Length: 343
Image 1 (cartoon, rainbow, N blue to C red):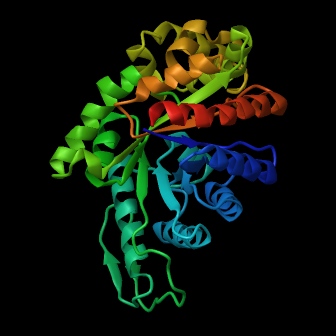
Image 2 (tube, rainbow, N blue to C red):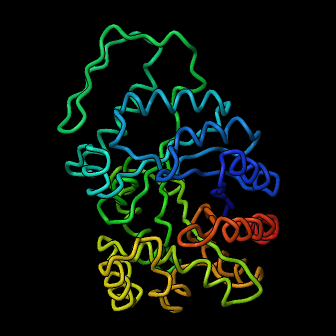
Image 3 (tube, helix red, strand yellow):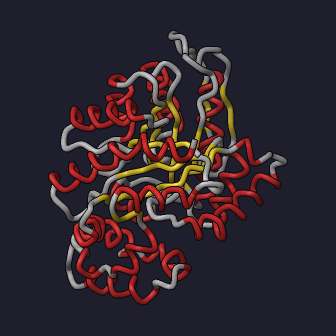
């Protein structure tokens, strides 16, 4: 099981510095998210500032860019990273796509299937000058008279899919080079709900388990004071619990009532980042890696034998930059120790 990391920074310079330190500690991949920053721009900064770790988007929104733009950015990022880039794509939720980005949502499973197909086709043929003609319900592509005049680092760039629901997870098993979990994903949920669907998709496509990289996310809060560790991470749990789309996930963990309490707090007018006091200790214990360094390291080992890689990240919601910075430093200091235990 490999250890990977999603660095944080109040500035891009700080984020790159954190990524460099995580790389030196032994992180195999450095991941960047998309919400408060652009995933591709952040990935470019990180690729330029590091040397050995692979650089992945976790995730770039699939429908807010055209497949051609996504493919061009992937080619450029792979050049900057000297062949270290991983394109992680996700759908986001309907409201984010339609209301925030004025982007088409459609049927997300079919839509992202066509998006991945188009990106792969463009990357493979960008320098050939050949016509690119692909039919589709969501992403038809007609390109004539195009030939990229610059060499590409690779004609095949790994594409990972973020998936939580069963249909999207099966699709990842069918077509993706990797699967990336939601920010909250317990070992039990991974074993009971995710991996069977992933295997179903692999079987349908006549692929073996070794052909997909399963990356589970583990948000960590490390502190010798258990109450302080829980305080830092409660806001992140509240942020995701406020989204009704995740009702099945919380119900699986017997946390439906706790999620409803968070939703009611959100409906009362609080911002999604400020729901920490509505989050129970039971939610934190079930869904995050929280405690002192030894406790968190042991919790991470709970994914061994299930995931191919664990993506560690610090808490960021509803806390100060100083809190996130301190949490990040603790995690980076722990990476080498965890790697030794999983080696």
